[in-house]
Length: 140
Image (cartoon, rainbow, N blue to C red):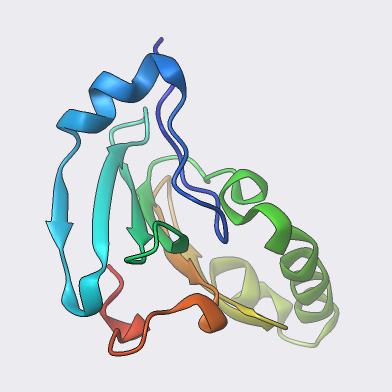
């Protein structure tokens, strides 16, 4: 299988050399504030969307997949903050609700995710990287 380009939150959009041709053909859409959205197949029939600032920095990702995505790969350096926030949320009463649907906030990270019966969707963004004039509520 050809490796896909993938987003890492807080880093420039990276393309493995074997995926450059695929990336050129990947659906792109211009959004407000000069943001580009690039959609990639997840390999399980779903998709992962990368939101790239005018400076080329990935400031948000969203997903709709059959299998739980590798958030450690998508979140990059923000993974440790996410893991700490998830651990704290799981320690609170009512944690079963956190397992199905959650909004977690950690330092400079917001992750909203849910999953049920092999359907996982969510979005994550770094508030300090969101371009002026772009509303994170529009992430799909």
